Length: 365
Image 1 (cartoon, rainbow, N blue to C red):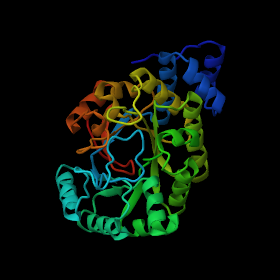
Image 2: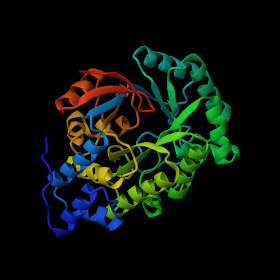
Image 3: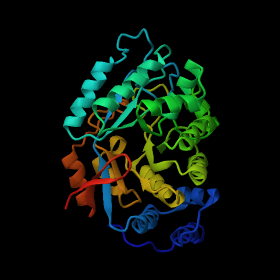
């Protein structure tokens, strides 16, 4: 375990002291931590803040399945290796019966959450999505449909010429329980213009989350980092998440994960484990109004995700009985429920299975 924090130099040390005093950090202070703080000292401070927030040292996880209903996408983001054009030989749209069969398999393995996402398909009818939600809700009421990112909701709004609020109302009425934070990338339009120019602006993404909150829906927030953004833009992303959380309280958790360059048009080099852990720790210190911080074993592997529990994470995410998007970029970490439990125990924490609402379903001594 990383020990208690000691003072750094005057700038980073003063910022860490401020965070440990429970005072809110400003953008320039978060930036100074990303730029200058020693990782061990930063991790110790973030770990202490996380322990105060979750004093019983429980680390949660959820049994879930990712279902990608189509890989056909008109946005063709430069960072994505998953998307296909409609005429490509490996392009697909899953029939509803196949989706239901996948849900049935997941439920048999104890899943309580579904993360259903796809490409921005140009011609699928809205009824496809509504019927999907209805049939899942009716056959599997024990499962939360945690699905359709803000960028998908915006695509539905434009394609079907419906206001965002109406799209969300229809999906909620059909069985949507909460929204994942996909499509956030970095909440800055310079960055988005470089990595996903055909997608929505950062303020449009945030507008969906605010509309969801107004309808009583909850969500998660994400950050995909380590590509073309500056450290200042990374902190600005956290600031914008914190601002909307102040206004709406919509986010149950924050999930930072690293860009994976394999098979993408954007290319580049993946961020290091050190950069990942540093960003996790700063996220915990900066997001003083977001309850849960989720590890990303899907991009980092189990051992780095285990280390992130000493950097402020209190949730191990989902067991992901199926994952296709990150795998298409050449990264294929797999963990069973037993392995997740062992990694949490190995970090000196108590594992607990949760649902989408972060309600504890079972604890493991």
